[in-house]
Length: 159
Image 1 (cartoon, rainbow, N blue to C red):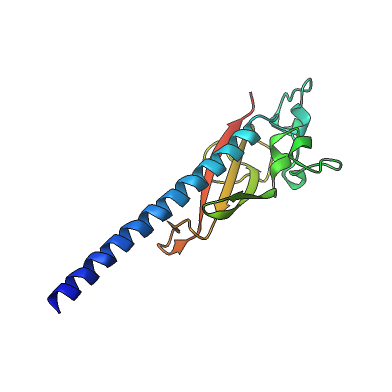
Image 2: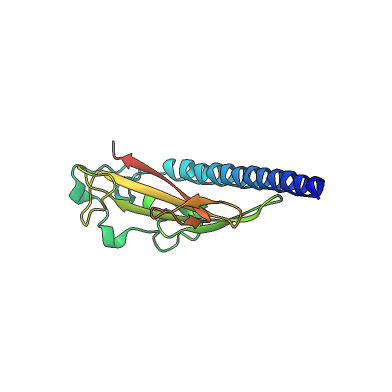
């Protein structure tokens, strides 16, 4: 009886460790997939009105927040020429080990005083949030509940 109890405890410990390793690997995969999309977005012009050779001399020259998103005729990422074309973009990336990772992008202006606050007016700063979700990814929400997604964010400044 004692031996059975010991074997069961050892087996549970091994399974728990393997589950943590599997979830960690899935989370690292999600981070890599999200970072790849962030880098793709960063290669584009800051704004539709700053696609070379155009320049903005003030924030008023930039796209108004209500019109952020891709323009007519821009059907896929190969057509996106500026950062905010990715706003609302979704894509699925399939892996052999963990299945589908769903990417979702949000792009918005942020205030100079607080990079977490969105702005209702154009600024020289845009924040890009890439959310990557997968059933094997385990992270914690702000209130401490487990969720199956991670969000990577960066702020791009017009220069």
